[in-house]
Image (tube, rainbow, N blue to C red):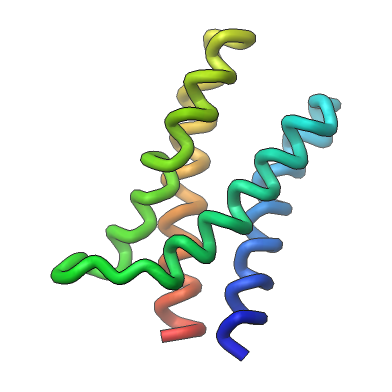
Length: 104
């Protein structure tokens, strides 16, 4: 059951992230990449144990793991780094909260 809840959290987070991308008509590869990032990030947050780390700090895995993608995106759009960083921090924390209250 926890696996399916984690899947649902990831799909919801991914959908939240790609809705503005769809509205801006970004290419399908970028949109699919962003969606998949949040699905995978959810499993990283849910199933990673870091001793002594508060549950809400696990959400910071979002911006840390997003850094390679952010660097690639900045090559094409110099202004994209801040929204990407903020969204990964916000959704990462939301994923950690959802996982804490729904799974753990």
